Image (cartoon, rainbow, N blue to C red; front, side, top):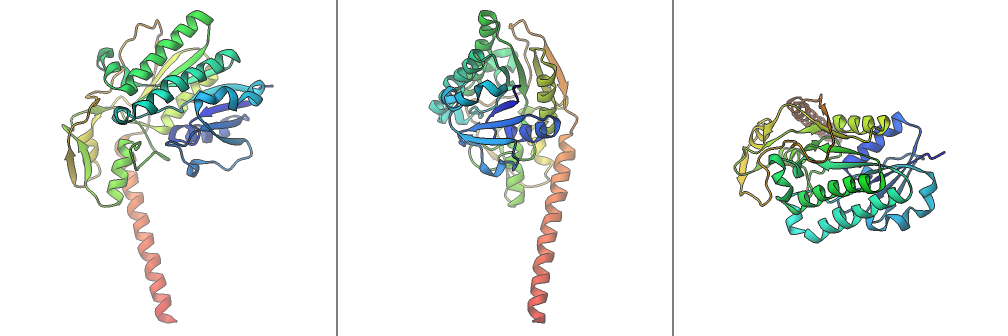
Length: 314
């Protein structure tokens, strides 16, 4: 019986949350394949059912060769996943999203494995024109075309899930791969102004990681060979989102590849997109984060006072 699920990017934000959820919902074992370019050992889950492997997806055939007979399915989340940074690190973006992903697709095809692939709204916005807005969007849109050809050429089956500005636990908060909400949380906790890219009116359908993972599980369990999108119905501008933190705001200059709306265009891929809507509200999440941070600061302060009192008593 095939009892292994492979998660590329399993030490990353989305991958680690998916493994956590599937450990509870299934009896499967897991292999995480991650090159740790943005993933972290801090996201490792201590469980005998998980094996963590370090490596690039371009080498997936070699790395997973001895496991392939036991693999049930592959969640491919291990790609270069930032728009602005794809201009600066084009080679890394292309190597990961084009060369690496091609090897993942081929590995699944050759071994008759179920593939669940994370697509992005970044390649489909603005009536499909945004697919050429950045190297990241371009590579992701080309991967969708390749999968459709695989389906037509080889009757290859897969599930596609379109992610929309995912946020929540284990998100990256610092560095070039940080998420918008992660950056705001980090700046807020350090009492720094929240940086908003001009003009600030760019809208996003921020979706909590729990809502995203729920749909990943639905797609995996139903096995429809379908396209899914998961997002919140309510859109917020970047500026409006920053204002929810009730902190100082600093505008920074516009960047290449910046999207002004987060929307799903109708594609000529002959696939109906199954829409699912997030249940977790962004405002509630940010309010909870602020309360939690203030409570943590209070506990730190009280602990410090206790130490000082004990020192005086001694």
